[in-house]
Length: 115
Length: 114
Image 1 (spheres, chains in turn blue, cyan):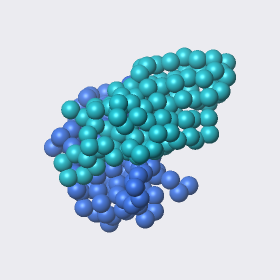
Image 2 (cartoon, chains in turn cyan, red; image 1 turned 90 degrees about the horizontal axis):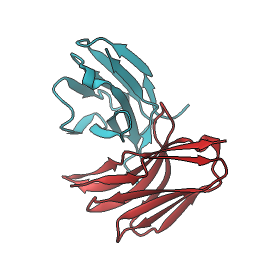
Image 3 (cartoon, chains in turn green, orange; image 1 turned 180 degrees about the vertical axis):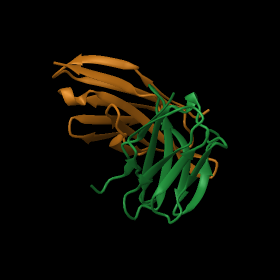
Image 4 (cartoon, chains in turn brown, blue; image 1 turned 30 degrees about the vertical axis):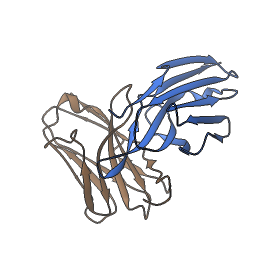
């Protein structure tokens, strides 16, 4: 499968615990995006990378959230001291950054449940 | 404020029937508009992408229209199938700050019944 992959697909954790999600983009896509989606809503932008540089972060990304893309390939999103309000689907997308559309291809998401 | 609004919120139709989903946006400046299909528990999959100069674009049984003057788009599904049951999300790309961002609508949840 050459699409965007995310792991784990589901994560259940207790409030206060730390969690880390991984995203593997489509090979050679230099742009990688993280989104959060709550039930019944569209995805909301969290942050994006061009290669290994984190170029933009949303105000939604509190200090408890950190994202990395150390070698410009896969990315991790860590949430520290999780809260119940963090329960959501976390989506990753990648794009080549070229073309008039700069189409983003989404992964299947990681569904986080904080108890 | 840059917003994308979709209607209806949810829709139930019988298999084989047609339906039309609506999207209004206030994003400016506007780059392009996309319709995505999102199955439950999955990531969104692109159906169509249109720039401001394109009025209509088709992808199989899906036809999207765009009126950049009124800032409205529609997605028409012909001869619906059970597998069309999903959320359909309208997404507008607009320039904010120093880069283009995708602004997502809340989606229309379509249920196709046999």
